[in-house]
Length: 229
Image (cartoon, rainbow, N blue to C red; front, side, top):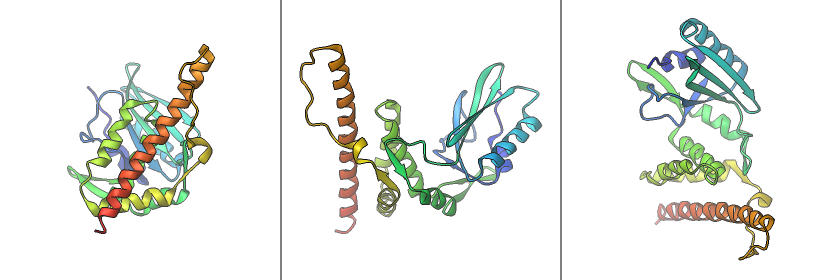
């Protein structure tokens, strides 16, 4: 399978942070996403297009979908998605909570340059990578069960100092909406109509989200307290 040279692509963009880096990077599975935080979306987009025209245009096509807060750039080969580059320039797409702009700035300020083969790429500081994964889990786990992998990734961390920095990140940069996260207390056990049943599904979903957040927060607090014993 022909693959986009992601190392060369990132070198062209320059001002980015690669988040949720897969273990196989810079290789990838057909149809994979590569998520990049960028400060200047328009400049990053221009550089991806220039890379495409210089290295990929004879073999495939490019499809750009510009949305609020992020931009999808699809490299197509024989009409099929080869890889998607997702340029994220704001965390405003989260709906269950809001993320302070300071976190975006911190990610760029504290990004790390790591060696991959003979090249290097920018990735977040470890506590920022955990925080990004935590935010994605909270936002999507009720709709996309595969997002549980982010919670598992966090729970597998053994470094106590890293856990502490992650804990501080989540409390410093996230703001929860009480209206979005309040737990319903009265859910009918036996709905009398399809409409009532659908209403119960909605209420139960919100309850599951709220309980999950409380459970995870409780685990993080326990970890934090244990550090000071």
